[in-house]
Image (cartoon, rainbow, N blue to C red; front, top):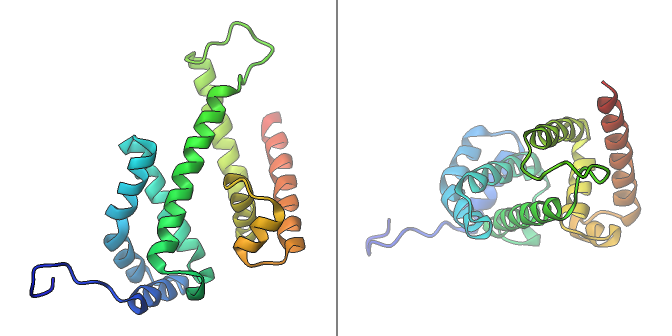
Length: 192
């Protein structure tokens, strides 16, 4: 707190130092960043998704992303707070888009008996989600970043490459590799 009762504004150099330390695996720096930004990230996501449980889950996802991508942060691309809040906004919007798509798509197109609220459907969806999370966990960090950037943000290869500051061919190759790995993993898991 400043002497006038206002909260002290954190200089950008301090934010950048925290992210650089996180990129080197410093858990203490991560805890500091989390404690300073958790409420801000949670509030933004809550305003978008209108569900506190989902907002808390997405907030944790955002900070997991900060932990895994901190080494890739580039100070010349924008402020740390902007970087984290952009991830928060993207996660929340991606969640809304995904939920909207799920409502529009009948997962049982050949079955007239399936109802959206049936227990079996919910169990199938939970099983599919678990298998998909497991398949995504098998991707390399660069593949996961490329596919998340392109698909969740609905960007073309070129737009994703520009956003990631990577060559378009590299991003395209990572996305194709990730899609193939996901396809193989989901087919393999579906057979078990």
